[in-house]
Image (tube, rainbow, N blue to C red; front, side, top):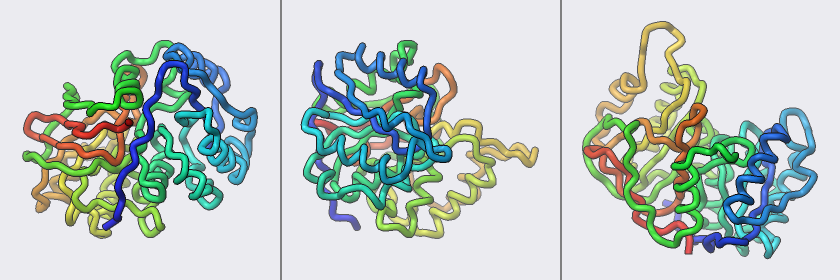
Length: 313
């Protein structure tokens, strides 16, 4: 079991500076500019390096330079939080070049999802930091951002109190029950990628959140079986499935996420819910920012997720 005492970063205040890094894909500059304006509209100053507009393959520059941006933002005393420009692919390639000492000595709010999941768990593991599964600048961050998404983002990173109950019409109970534990997880394919690395996810006594997009259900089934065979469900307290956007059965047999649960987890007696609106989404949908590394309670009977601990101080 990992011996981590999560460190809550300092909360953001009006007028604080947020930094933007590009650890993964390159991105559309117009969408990025709209995201920057949205951050400014929330009352924050914004800082980024011109290097984030670089290109190498599908990514926003070479691995060492993308990692160096992250190191510099953590070292920069002016920067109080770090947002990611875009996800996609490439975050895992920055890990060999990240400076553990700089990061551990300068805990800050760090936000992203999808491919960024591998960085979230890296930061949680090496620095004990509470991290945030939330929007990226060139994605959801724009003037027409869903108001509920904006509200949950600001609640998570500016208010040093627990976020409390999160109940949504999209939630569906797959297994009944109630359980408490520390919230971990993120994008399912990235959780799988971490297995066997020093940043392998620890599920013991945890509430596991997993979500994904655009995968055939055979792939999702394979991922779930992989987690099971790796022992990730042996001592987990509960599971929160995201919306699994556009994850369909391409065989034409109309197999569903519920069928996967019945097949692969039928003997695992823990609360499980499906449809939590965090991470990948369709246009206009909610993206609730989740603090990773804080105590939560999953009540599948309601269904609801209760955030019991403050994410910032």
